[in-house]
Image (cartoon, rainbow, N blue to C red; front, top):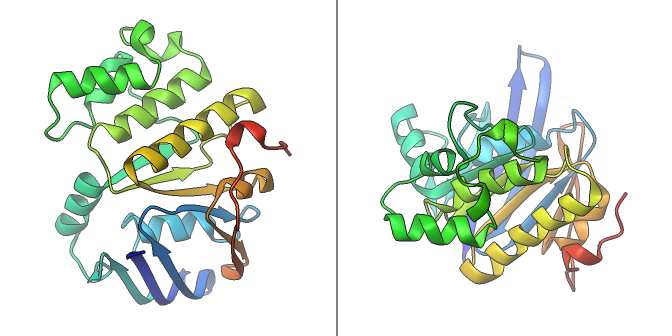
Length: 231
């Protein structure tokens, strides 16, 4: 496997003494499903922000596809996020004044209308594409968010608590979609969660506490999301 991300002795310190990350070393391979586990304040969202270029480390080096990104300027980082990354958040981050289809189109780079229609259909949103967010269920809004990520054909999709606002049935359905995307397109999926059940879908599981990686392990066999025992 090719290494897509490499972190070397990465630390993030806020206000001189608030240590969010401390001496993190990490490698992520292309096409992996990564699950980052930890309680609130453990540093998992900070790690996601560092990987995605939404934040910069105080110390250390961050490499994406063998290219260092922590020393890039904001214009370069914005291009990296726009071209290569997709984002799925717990709060969905949809524009309330736009329809589902229009929200999905916000992620477009070069895809044509035919590809847009295919993604809408793939995500089961054909009958909902002209509805506004307030007319959609939580699961449907999350599918719109995933479709908005997919429309740019990203190399990596970052998911920050993607099932946190969903019940078990819908949460599993969203994870199933992410597994399909990973298998069909070899997209690297990085999921931040506090739900230990989700760890079983990951190729690699990263456990964090107090800004440090306390354990990293590989699942010899991953579990289909539909078969997870929800905690």
